[in-house]
Image (cartoon, rainbow, N blue to C red; front, side):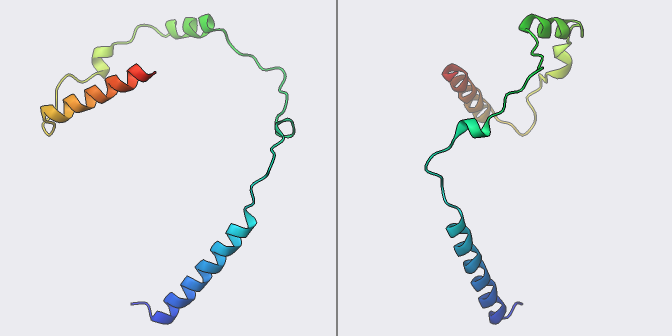
Length: 94
């Protein structure tokens, strides 16, 4: 068990630290984007058809191997329906 004096010292140190952090973190009035940004040259960005062409070279994917069809033992039907309806709502928002 930690004595009361150690709690008091720890609390005092924490309060002093928080006070110093609060005073040191000033928000700027204006942020100059040009100062933060850099121009990058010689960057190659592939076209979408090049990306999909490279993915097609990998071959066909056997999705049945990766997707489970069994429901599982600890999953009842109501939570499954709730999750599916939530996913559908999220997909509609996009």
